[in-house]
View 1 (cartoon, rainbow, N blue to C red):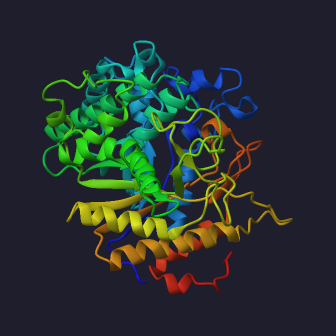
View 2: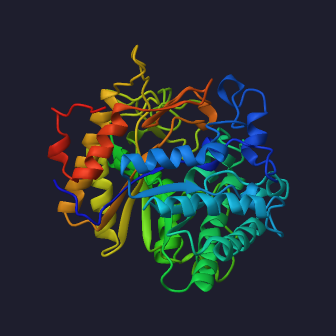
View 3: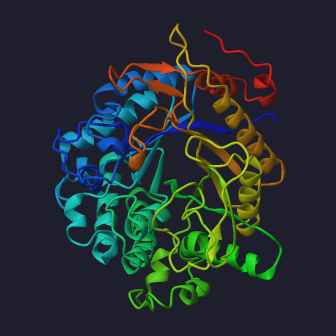
Length: 472
């Protein structure tokens, strides 16, 4: 497989995971600042207070991106940094930081892909109800409009939301993400208000920047496989697909409410908070549908007394899959990443081709894909992360296969540029193509970063095949 010259090879980060400077430049606390200060919520009591210090070291990171020869950098804007009160006045110091970053990217020939929301809601808005409150969707639209006015000339692509499934179900359902609530009704309200937020923000961006603005919505669409072809197992898989995928796809992409979701969740809500006309507001089809993919899950109809992984990817505790108590997630098989996730490039092919056939002509991008492994540092300081290279080679092969099967797939963003704060796991999981020494903040490009740079340069998977050797 040879990728076209127009295919975008990029990498990605998120503000709270890399920026640090948590109390500098006018930034106010986000829900993750609060989460990190809640005992027992984050491994080792880790915080994003310093993280990778990209707020001060962005020029160094930009040089790394430039040196790798990448086409695009997907970063997120900290809402708390640019609008400290959540609504109202813009913080000039915060906006200027992102302007400098975007201008620096352009000078390096790298496209700036800005995500407006990657899970770090201003705490002041959470205090008013967070995503369980309708007002937050309108505040998000105002924030999007303000950023369009401030940064519209230096951002190439706007992504509204990153993985609203996580924001709703992990943040308000299972409590493993900020704000750490365990409330099924709040979680389902958040699902709707996040869909509404995407729609309102997309409309605001298009009003401010015109019809040529490029808008992306990034979803972590799930590949759920039934343990057998029996009716009960197939129904179990469908139930998870409805809660995980259809809850977001149908309102945004099709302008309709998934009636199966109404039936599944009838014990929690009648969805009366969905007002007349809301689905028309949600129905803002993005120019790019971003897909984040890491692993597949296998499910079966629950058997009384059978042990089940709550999330299907190695998590335990309260399940984020609301109203799906009759579904059992089976333990992943085969080689796993350090996150406990299975490695299955075929799932990415399946997901991309299925989505492309469902929405013919829709531009798709893989906006996140990558793997956490324990990286050994050699005596000379190099990191020979062969496992990550094998993972990337397999999944980029899957991207190529999906293109050959007709998917309109225009880019791939490796997660992540840097080792960083990995949410409730703290700093214990490393996804980066660049190692960060958390004591000194020194950056070191791993072999996987060099491999990815060679692929971006040659655009030929054969050129970075099994006999590839890292160059200095």
